[in-house]
Length: 357
Image 1 (cartoon, one colour):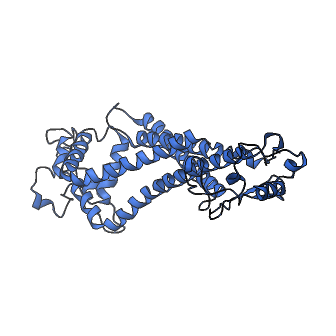
Image 2 (cartoon, helix red, strand yellow):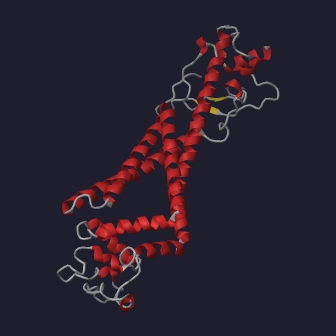
Image 3 (cartoon, one colour):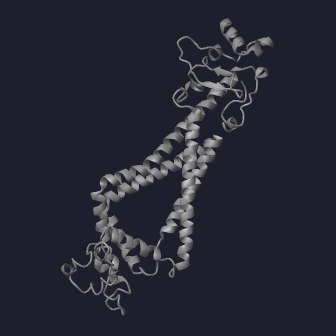
């Protein structure tokens, strides 16, 4: 007991200067490391940067017998600024996606002639941008202010989004036929309004040229369109868009009427004129042929979210350990001998640091 008191006097001269006795509630095991107990090596910097208190005499246990989880493994500052940079990065990306979606929707409204036809890509971009912007902003605030409630909201939101994406991918693979049928019905419905929504028109034209396909199931889906129906008047009747046609040779001008009157012909007659397979089948064949690229793309989407969940979890546990650590130290000091520390500007962000030496 006497050696512990001498150690306390050496570390806190103010206690001995006032000749204050050791408070009865202070246990020697808190002031001095018990024999055989591994102690922590956490370092607390003062505001001036010159005084460093090596808390090597506090046992490596928390109140109620809980062990310190990450004090020696993960730096508080490193976790804080890693999470802050992560959240700010996705916050900016979310804002950028939101801005693009708003711009695209404004342009779409200027040219759209039919309401409610198709869930436009601009709407999807706006919804995705809002979700990313709000969730990332919560992460920025939580990491700056060390707010445990906001940190948990941020972590659980990322975890839920990650699980939903995984479940959606797994269900899509398990029910491939149902997924393909749903996709066919969606495309066929929107082929009916092909010329009424420029977003869908541009998207389908790109898909037909990129995957060398025509229609959803096959080229006959274009008979659903009022302009391409064989009973319709005009030059488009019983035809398909020129994006269904075979790619011309280099430097050759594409014939925009190459799909004229092809719907009343047999498949074998059209092999040298247009692409006869549907875009749904062509898309799934592309996925299977490029499974390595698709796997890399999937990891590129999921791994950043998983990284955010792990860093958030580590940071939450680190803050909890720090709060418990300093609450234990506060109980071991005599109230009249506490010396409040000036942390400086940056340290004011660290709400879990103690206010005393």
